[in-house]
Length: 364
Image (tube, rainbow, N blue to C red; front, side, top):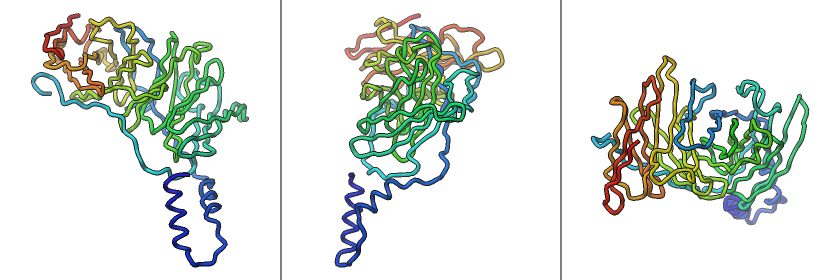
């Protein structure tokens, strides 16, 4: 039961006071919760997340534009745009259809991906404390298997379905979701909102056999900007905005990962925090082909909390950089070189004053 149901019951009793009637308020509300319409689920497809192998000072490369839709002052810094966790106190209102179906037959993975026609997540019940439902997989036009699930409300869950497929759900409406894994082969994934319950379902296909066992967890960003992970904690992050593009930088100590994701095209790169030395301020970057022999290169770094008076020397005179404070006080720095014929590092050096006022300089 929730606050909305309490108010509906109270209003019903007040409105019918003194009126003889045989209507059962409990039964009416329960029937409303169970109602399902036949409206078709609108299929919203996020960018296919190709896994980046975790490594130090590497590049995540997007050679062509994705098939699926993805998403300064003189010193070069911008106002901080920390990504803070938010929550909504709005009461739950049951909304049809409380399910979502992935049509895998239309996924463009070049023959790679789950060997099923579809995956359907259906919520059977939901309270203020928990939810439960069923996952159904269809193959060759026939229902191949079903699995029941339940979890505390507001938490995520995942289930290794077979040697290659991982399925699960996370709270909130999600703009992107990344699987953190030590596999050396590709991971293909997608996510869709389960309408009416404030959740997002996902699947991830691992090229490597027993790949789901290599997964360390997953993290995601909701449409309101908050980043969470499968351990149930909020993840520090920041949105860094350049002239024509923006990026999300995050740092998750529980999953031992620091990464960057381009808003729009879904290009991303990440590496292990434990592999980075204290002096390695530049963590890696992204490459995107312009289709004319030149490349768009982006590098990023995370400075300690309290860093200020930041100065970045770029290798490209046409490049740009910006910074933003992360929600844990660290500073995310992103630099971009829009049209390069080589892979020369974008950042030559970074200088800043630490929290104690000491000048720190990093050079490539």
